Length: 167
Image (cartoon, rainbow, N blue to C red):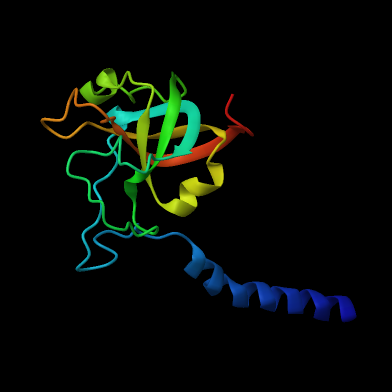
């Protein structure tokens, strides 16, 4: 009799938990703006995605490397900015999926220095180290191509340390 009671108890628990398990199952995917009234960012353009390795350094204090029209006002460390960090001695890596890196902006990105657009907490732990960075290349603003001190920006999506120091 105790085995029957035990089996019956397990059966009751199983039946009772079925509605809860069904509620956890995935349903229709959510659509629409999850934060009404807030503009959502555009989806990434995979054709503009590139991967580089190089040395992550603070941006020069004189503003060299900033895009034309960059503000010299204090920059909020929680807001993405291309004025705080640069990737120097950049070497293009071919570790991106097929169909990426084929835009005109990536074809024109042949420099060795790139402004890195990201937030402080994303990039500051890697200053002075050799890193691999993937992201979306952002072309130079119109009229600034060839201007001294301007380099393309890379909207950082992924960063990983590959050496403890730059050599």
